[in-house]
Length: 320
Image (cartoon, rainbow, N blue to C red; front, side, top):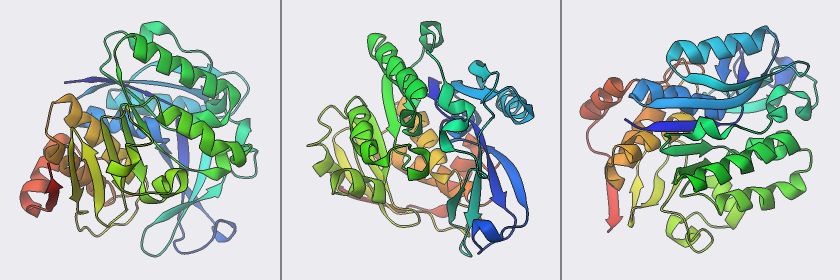
């Protein structure tokens, strides 16, 4: 059992009740707890790990509901800060007819208006005993939360805590998207493990082959590139390979990538092989698409193992 710190945004995904229409055509929304690092923290608890979430929520009902949600699952919420004025972020999520989601905005409020952007300096005490620090990239978009992210990296490195960064490219979060890519690259240069979506690797480095990305990220011990329902690629523990997505009847892909990251961290902490790690992560991601939302849809460790037993082998190992 590992102890993982997840730092970043906690928010409500406002999931469109109408499928296949744009945000301005949606007439009603269903709020579902989310935020990539918060999703990862919850997914890890369901897999049997200990997690501590660090983030900032508003002093409002959505903020209280989110804190209670994480706490009810078993996440250590001692690192959640409460901002007295800024509201808890709520993000509109629209879905196409295939269940794939896209972000429709923040309900008319400016992107930097929300509490998660105001995360202040984190306490060193929160890092005691941790094995991994998991970060997204959205916290880099705003001065306060960016400074807190870099402080967390400093604390992790001082204590020998491994760092996993999950790139989460959302240009609508960035006040100045022109500086975003360089900022993200700076963080990736500090990571022991990096997870990209295929389009993110292409955007940041112009390449989607994990081994090639080692030239840009020589310190990385593992690089994984997912591609939705297609074949993903990885280089992990010196092993390069491909992992085919599990075929499922997806209804909502929100949080699938976060479940993948949780599965990856769980297996890394358990000392599993590259093959076992990526297969387990892919299964976790696939299962999360079978229900709406992110946190509520996440599978347990037992459900993942059962799913893999019933699905058969879907691995292609290129070479060792």
